[in-house]
Image 1 (cartoon, rainbow, N blue to C red):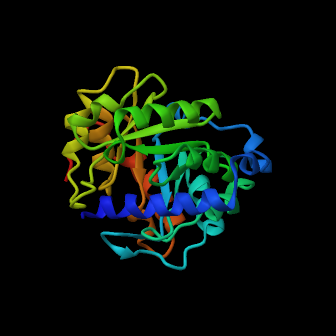
Image 2 (cartoon, rainbow, N blue to C red; image 1 turned 90 degrees about the vertical axis):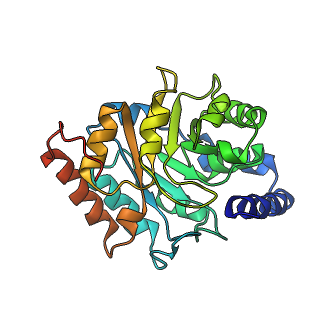
Length: 269
């Protein structure tokens, strides 16, 4: 069983447990369930660099990255640094996150929040709405096209946006009418190896109206400029910021460097 299969198996158990503890009607009664939703797509189109800064304490490939990190300290600093949106890991077992990490910052942050988790059941979409997320992540590698369509339709019915994550061309069939934002993950979820060329290769196969986001393995301004030339308008970055003592400052310095880097530089070094 590879890492992705282990995560999905764990997630099925977790979702079953949560369903037994909190009903859908209880989720719908949460005060955050009715809050106005912010659009990640519009934020990426209306801000200069499209950085989606991620809050992540650990990963299966790297272990603990920033174990004592508090979202109340880091996420507002991301917004102040100029991030267009924030991604928050809510998986506990493999990523050290929790739904409370979104709740902790919702009232103090005015940029869109992505619930980054392994979504396999419509119940999790309701959870995302109740915890204050604006966007959910759907990972094609975890789902069939029919499951993707069901989860995306549920999200749209609740006013949430959907970021569909792809890894290779075989997953293009997951794109459906309720998805207008597509992320290409440069990290292979089975081996956890990273190759930014994955984004550039798959971008040419996406529908013209899809807003394109590149995820993972982005660590220098030259990469962002090269990916922008390839049609990308969003860049999800986590470990590059979270691995240092001050993720907010790292995000600020990176965005400042983007403004200094010549736009015509398309090196991916």
